[in-house]
Amino acid sequence: MKKKTAFLTALAVILVLAASIDSAWAYFTTYAEAKGGHTLSLGDKTKVEEDFSAWTKHVSIQSDPDSEPVYIRVKAFCGSEYKLVFSDKSGKWSPGSDGYYYYGDIVNGGEATKELQVKIENVPKDVTDADSFNVVVIYESTPVLYKEDGTPYADWKNKVNTGTVKGGAVNE
Image (cartoon, rainbow, N blue to C red; front, side):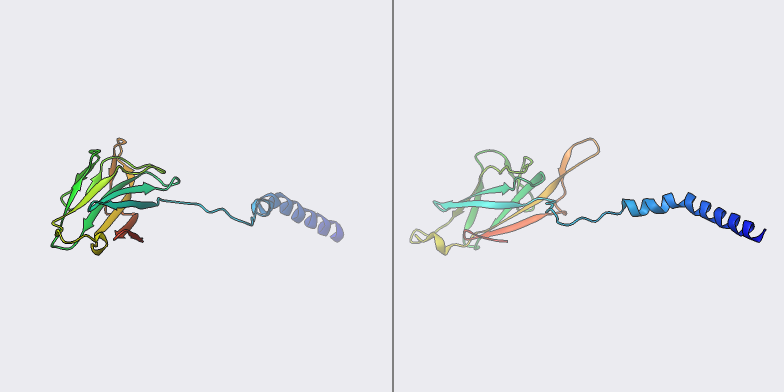
């Protein structure tokens, strides 16, 4: 009788364990490990394109093809004895109260802004070497955000990409 009771007890324990093995087995069958990887690009990347001729910097900001849509703003500085005059043939740039010029359209990945011209005025007539001038161009981008009604807007406190161009060389 003791053997029969021990056998039935062992059988009951085995049946209880067998009933709960599915949940334990599920853990081991859903665990996976992979090797290798793939670079994931998040955010945006922009760069300045610039040309200098006739005492004027021709500035355009290019967005990388895999970048998210962004808004762009630009500011330029030079010595206090010279004056910078901004002009825009496209009508896409507008001055802000903070000294920046804001591009009115959203710049999608792979696109570029229209040209913003920054002319150096008050150059003495005897100066012929344009390399002796140092005009610093600062540009910033921020991702396009959307309000609840779908209206896009820019949050300039959340700048993503900033860069400067000084005398024609990019310093990032």
